[in-house]
Length: 376
Image 1 (cartoon, helix red, strand yellow):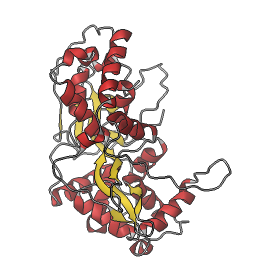
Image 2 (tube, rainbow, N blue to C red):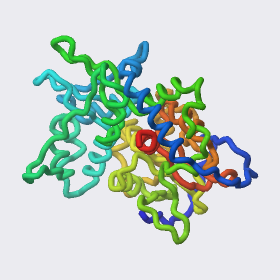
Image 3 (cartoon, one colour):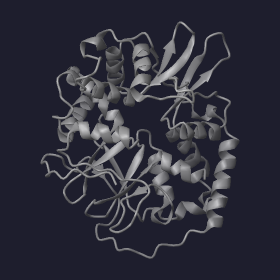
C-alpha cells in the first residue's frame, strides 16, 4: 500500500462542495448475491449495443474543439488550456499535415516536476520558446520508454473515425490508457477534427439506450459492494492487489504529483485524520497553476495540497468554470444504475465511495473501472 502521509489536519477545507444521497443512520443490510448469468447477459446486451452503434452518436449538435500546433511554445499552450477551461488538446503538425498527438495534464505535471529538479536542463525562461514538439521529444528521454531494441520511440496518436463502433472507441480508450480519443474524418485532403471522444460520452449513450428497459440489464439493480468494481480501501489484515492512495491536506503538492505519476491514477482523495473525505486532487487541476504564472512562483515541495486546491478554485472562478461541486460521491449500497447515471455526467470521471454520515473513504470507482467491468 502506498503510505498515507501522517500529517495533522489543516483547517479551511470543508465538505461544502460535496454532496451525497443517503441516510446518515443507514443500517447495513444483507448484500444480495450477484449471479454470473446476470452479469454475462448484461455484458452481452451492452456489447451488442456498442457494436451496432457508431462514434457519430457521440458528436454534439454544436460545439468547438480546440487543437494546438506543435510549434506553439509550451507556456502558451499551458495558458490556452487554462483559459479555455479544458485539460487536453490534440496536436497538429503543419509540416506533415496531420494530427500527431495529445497535450494532457500529465505533460504539465512532468514539466513542473522537471522545472523543480535542480539538475534539469529545462528552465522557466525556456518555456517561453520551448515548442510543444521539442517537449514531446524531451519527454521520451524523461520517461525512458524503450522498444525491444533499446531505442527511444514516440507514442503514436490514438484516434478513431466517425464510422467506428462505440465498442471500438471504448476499447481504444481502455487498452491505451488514455482519457480521450480524437474523432477524425479523412474525407477530404485535410483531416478534420470532429470531436474528442471519452468514456463519459459512451456511457451516456448506454444510459440513454437502456433507460426505458432497465430490466434488460439485470445487474443495474445490484449494489456496487456486490460487484467486482473499483478500488477499495483494504480492511485490517486484508491484502489488496491494488494500492489505495490518500493524502492529508497539508501534504505537499509534490507528494500529490508523485502519486499521480507513480501510482498511475488520475486523482487522489484528500482526507482528514479520520480518513473522512475533504476534497480530491486530480491531474486536470494542474492547469490552474497557469493563473498569474503561479507555476513560476511556487516550489512544489513547499506548496500544500490545501493551498493548491485554493488556487484551483480561484482559477476556476475567474473564468466561470467552478460549479460549486468538486467531489462526487456514492455509498456502497447504491445500485449500479445510480453510479452509471452519475458517471455519465460530463466532468464526473470518478465517484468516491464513502461511509454514510462520516464520509470516511471506503473506495473509488472511475469510468475506467466501470467499463472494464461492463466489457468483461
